[in-house]
Length: 335
Image 1 (cartoon, rainbow, N blue to C red):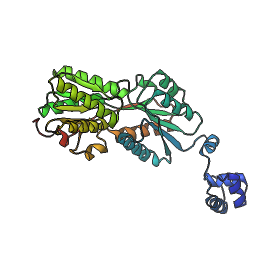
Image 2: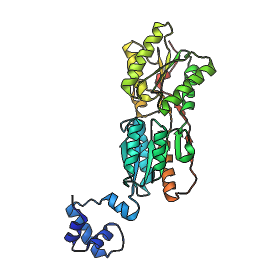
Image 3: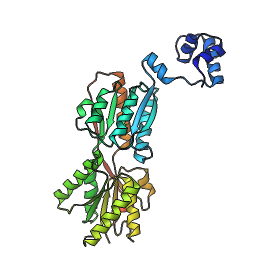
Image 4: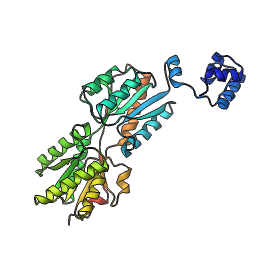
């Protein structure tokens, strides 16, 4: 990798002149021309961290998510990138996994000064994570429900209301035996969505028929849906509908239903959550609760930019309300 010294020597100028030319500071047009040509010839890549230490900014923001392959996080990432582009920031994407340990590891790495700010969407939040967030020397915006949100700029979806929308929609289509395939309940979304399903069943007088998957993935959803469908069939209360905690779990439910000869939506209606790109790709297309992934990403980026401009501004919390997107998986009445 070429160095600034090599660029300066190739251009025939001092290191200070080469640095000024590359950073857009005061330099003659001829110097800029020579230094730019030398940098291109040598394929010179500026050291963002060193430049950041000198100028007090790196021009980089970090976005930490549990799974970079999840459609929801991809949509959120794009919204963040779009929102900060005009402010000349680059976004570094990091997969922090689903454990507090990996989330904390990312936060500690940021202490090295590689970025100017952070958006993080953690699956699990505990005292250790909150303490690490509080120790960060860069602004941070948390996407997700926090136990004490007043300390951080925060954006979250109202997923509890989303669960209610899903169950009420299924009742409107004539379904009465509604099961729920949740994700891990030691995660924030799993805990919130599980409590919401319990509450709506109590309010509407429905039997609470649920199971907890080991993860918010297709494979975990498939295993959990198999268990739920088999268990309810054995007890003589076969389901006519399932609410899944996200669209990946819903896809697993599709496969579990097909293995048992169940038709969707005739024998079993299915509602997902997130309204990711996957919802429109499944056959039949999946009714899903839109939790505003793009809106959450945009709000988070806007809050971070505002914090960078004014570090002393009061913290702000934004709640994105859900919307039900009805597709083929809940069409008609149960057979």
